[in-house]
Length: 95
Image (cartoon, rainbow, N blue to C red; front, top):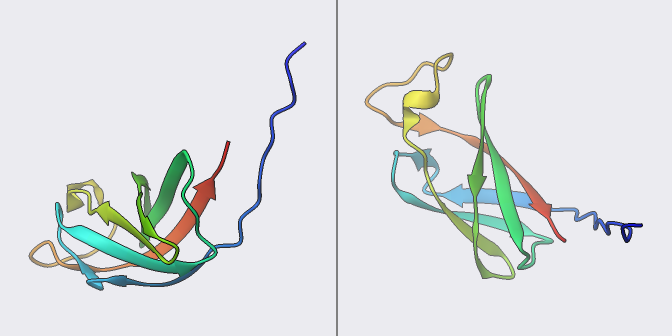
């Protein structure tokens, strides 16, 4: 019999990202409350109807960083010169 899997709900409140305009390949800081360093750190990047999971790097108790993915994956969002204003929602998973 397998031991039970333990899940932890984390109420993460995203305060913002810097820079607020994404350029593919650029390192972006995600400021939030309620974050902690865990094994699995990912965020859902949503732009229009397009959605993509990205890996996060823990910096401190209020900051994650991530590398902005190439913006060619966005098909249904209008953009100009690869610059896009974004809305970021964070999800943190812990084992």
